Amino acid sequence: MQFSLQVSGVYDDVLDAARWAEERGLASVALPDHYLMSLNPDQAAEVPAPDGFIQLAGLARDTERIGLSVIVSPITFRHPAVLAKMAVTIDRMSGGRFALGIGTGWLDKEHEVFGLPYPDMSTRFAMLEDALAYVRAMLAEEPTGHTGEFFTLEPFGISPRPIGPVPLIVGGTGRVKTPRLAGRYADEYNAYPAPPDVFRSKVATARDAAAAAGRDPDELLISSSGGVLAASTRAEYEDMLAARASEADMTIDELEAYFDHRQTPRGTYEQVAEILADMEAAGMRRFYLQLGADFDRPRTAELLDALAG
Image (cartoon, rainbow, N blue to C red; front, side, top):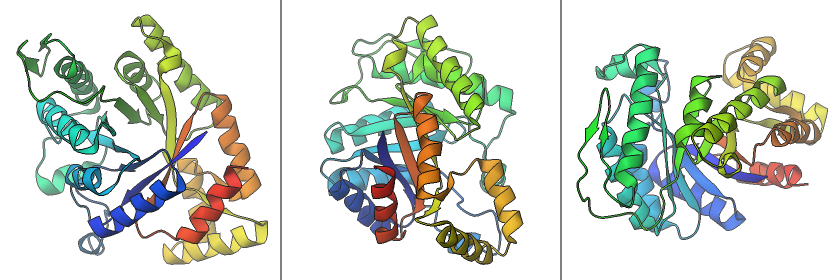
């Protein structure tokens, strides 16, 4: 199983994190695409939410080997032509290391704050499928064009072309529509952690959709991402949990309930390794550790070493 980082923060911190990940030989570094990173009005002004694509263009020039991706860009933010153009540009700037992630969008508040249109979920899924077909057509070696409900592309020669295939990532928490779209259009399906039976079902849905579309389901990279809270002993974990609860102004029970809802892998290193092993048995091949870009390097290195066995 491969490990990647998904980080957020100001550029200097993101670059430092990416170079650290590159030195450790991690598979990739991913950035989110959000215009708000805190929903608390008292904290939002203190929590940076830079433009992820511009930061990734910087990383394309300031790193050498590590894969780069956005997980994932809401289709509500940009027309798919803009997404594809940015993807090709970063692909070329990075020497072919960029993967484009697209999703429906889910954060109501950032749309409200910035006055961005936010259709209902059914419409956003329809927009996402239309956009994925559009981007596939735009990145195709030969102009094919696309005519959809929301987006239209003429079969016209477009330059520059990417250095190589730009992998598409589809990610989200949905149990049916998201994996179906990933299987039909994507190169990577990023499925958020879920109970084992749910995770297996989503992976199966994605692979079945790939086969139905005439694609090789074994070529679909299954990944997941999330925060991890782990320590070498149970006592250390409990101390860490108490400290995290205090930082969040929550009781330990409230924080545990929050982690339960998000299916956060947590406990001792051995317990977290077992959780990830179950996901790997279901098909997961890559896990993105979600961290702030100013994360504790020594502790994260210890975690990665422990999980690598």
